[in-house]
Length: 115
Length: 112
Image (cartoon, rainbow over all chains, first blue to last red; front, top):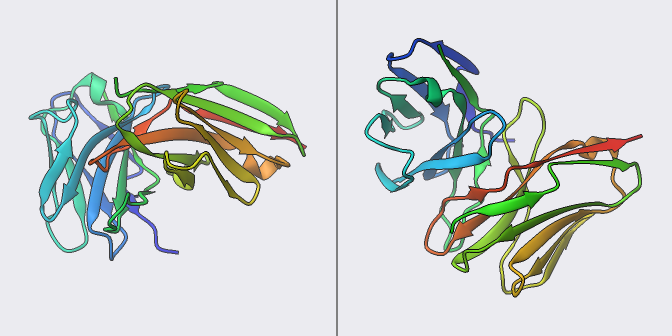
């Protein structure tokens, strides 16, 4: 069964460093998303991406964050200068394009630890 | 207010019993209500979803009940099995948007 793949599974970084989280969405999907879950809290929407541009973003997704689809298969989330509060599980998701709501398929997540 | 409130935080059920998880929302612009199931080490996976024009949807042992006037929806798991032990998230999506607004999750344990 096709699945969304995220790498690495765990990323440890120092505060102020840049990190890039990588995702390989399901191959025929055209919508891509990033969510995050701080330990003990709810899963929160960060950004959606379609047709090589951001279609929607939350207030969390500030100038420190960026997304990119550098090639035909990868979708990345970059955090320019990490803060302690960026420590969380980051989930990538993808969906096909329907006329109605899309089913979002989630990866297993990347746990980001900022020290 | 784009929040979804989920209860209980944790639930322990005996095998064969009924598990019930409840969610409530305030934003009437939500038009899609999925439930996601998450096993340890895995990402959330869609279990079942409903739109506000129906009051109930059933898929196998899983049923969503939806009360539009009360702005509440719930997941019922009939004949609960140990393999159902997981964290369950309700979510909602606003009209005109693809984003999901999640509840805090319910950790379900089904004892053999």
